[in-house]
Length: 137
Image (cartoon, rainbow, N blue to C red; front, side, top):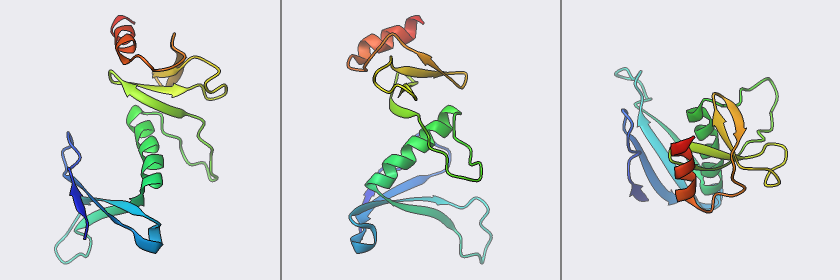
């Protein structure tokens, strides 16, 4: 049992979401993401691919997926690598991050050609001002 959430918009393959109680195993609410298996063959048990995550796991996964979408994913190098990019928000199609070394003690950063660059902003409190900056940069 659970609540069907909206399908993920603007994608070719249908990606559905369902919120449900995870019980003791998950420790609270979960979301199950389901999509059809494009390599499914009749008789296989794998008609769909799915993943079920808690709210905290969903937030962490969302950051990694955003990095992948921006083309700055962190590759696995045989050990766990701590990702220093602190994603803040996407405004006007531009992803903004905290400075990887100085955090909020430095201007907000944005990604350009796979490199972090300074903005003139120390916070993202005024999205309209940021959209104007994007339009004029």
